[in-house]
Amino acid sequence: MTKRLIAFALLAATTAPEAPSAPISPPVRPADSEPPVSYTVRTGDNLYDLAQHYMRRLGDYRIVQKLNRVRDPRRLPIARTLLIPRALLKSDPLEAKVIAFRGSTSINDKPVALGMTLGEGGRIRTGANSFLSIALADGSTITLPSQSTIRIERLRRLRLTGEMERLFRLDDGRSQTEVTPRTNGRDRFEIRTPISVAAVRGTDFRVAVLDGGKAATTEVLDGHVGLAGGGAQATLEPGLGARVTAQGTTGPIKLLSPPDILDPERTQSDPDLVFRLAPLEHAEHYRVQIAKDAGFLDIVEEALVDRPEANLPSVPNGDWFVRVTGIDANQLEGLPRVVSFERYLNTLRAAAEPLPGKRRFLFKWQGLGEGKHLYRFVIARVDLPDRPVIDEPALTERSFVATDLPPGDYIWRVETRSVDNGKTHSNWSNPQTLTVAGKTKQTKTRAKPPAS
Image (cartoon, rainbow, N blue to C red; front, side, top):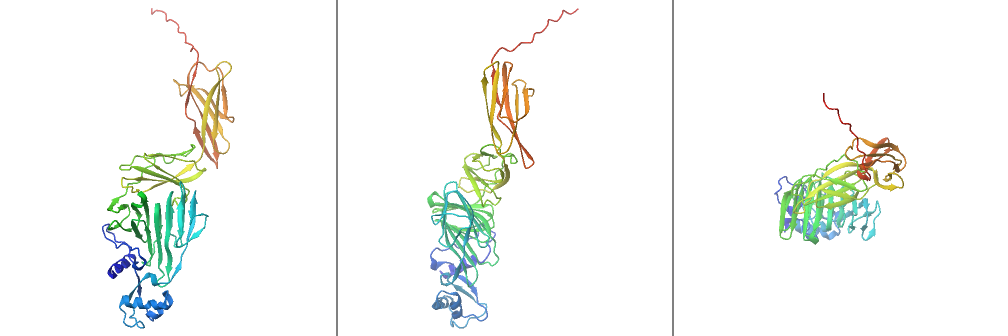
């Protein structure tokens, strides 16, 4: 047992190895089996003083003495390494802070407020179409999308070594974590699920709980993650993921490439946001998220779709970011594509109706969007679409009456234009057809005289 604890202590104190197949020792759940703290003896140290200043009880020095086979607790060789059970050591609590949230979210079943703090034992829940991000004291962040539950199992700093312990348990849903790199080689950061443990230092990774806790996935975007579960251990490199079940681990598997967004520079001017993607090989689903920041700490909308096109609810005018990923048959989410886009609601709903009189028609429209707008009304014969019969370019009213339209088939539409911060925004309504009943006048032709 002691050898196993020593092996995990060495893992926590070093950067994950480069080889994806290199095994790691999994964290052990019981408190008395947690990896011990490794301490290097300095000048003047003895077990009595260490117990008095850094251990919970003075008599705990006996446990350390027995574990390390120290003959005289008053005398310790300089530079000797002591292994000390974590449960014996004093620590100072750390806090996490809410930096962004949307929708129905709670902390310990209480409503969330921006800047709210939480510590060990804190439980975060997000409801449908809800999101929440927390930041730790070292700058690390955890983002929870919809329908997720996470609990802080440990958030403290050990007084003896200064190392931080940040242990979380994801009971349901998903999480994306960005851990600030540390140089002391001692800090612990783990995301635990009912079936797996992901242990990291500085990295960017995702963890999800699936099928009611019967499966879990881990995907690495940057850095390395030591994964334990399903009776196996592995080290995941960037761009790799794995799925863990009680039957074993599937992976490491290469994550799907980022999907391409078709026409990414198009201004989103319609009532709903519409994103069309290039089909991605082996993708069974696509996830599309909208945020105000490129780091996606402040997510506002999300959609999971089965085809490469997503419609999302409207957001206010301004500059936004969209992030898209593909999801494979193992439910591993692929690498993300992040693109900025402009949202400016500027669209029309138009209709036409007949008026009393000789071939009179009322064309009317309703503009959606803020500010003042100018409108352009254009109608042309179907067989001559590039030669308008009527072209009114600067209308301020949202209607136009056309009189004495000759019989025939027509196509018409309306353009809306507005200026915001010196930039002109333009959009056309969908083309519509109109048939004016009556006989079309035939052009009379003269008979040519016979040739001489």
